Length: 80
Image (cartoon, rainbow, N blue to C red):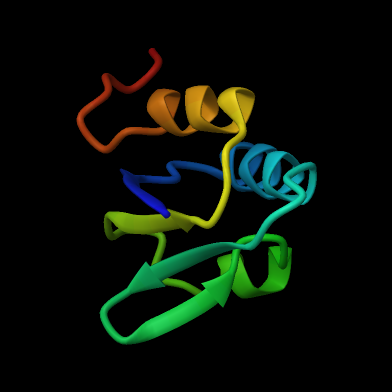
């Protein structure tokens, strides 16, 4: 199991994140406070407070998905 923090800044990033999670053949969860959401559920992800840093927990390995998570890191620069 691995964990990474992300911050989703807009609707396109949410769509990209959920689409990538769906491609994983293992469970992926998103955590904020005590709320746990299936990362493969776009409605579930949209129900979270997207102004906050979210924790993604992966129960498998997928290099492409992890690279996407790195691009969604909370400390990245906003695109101009």
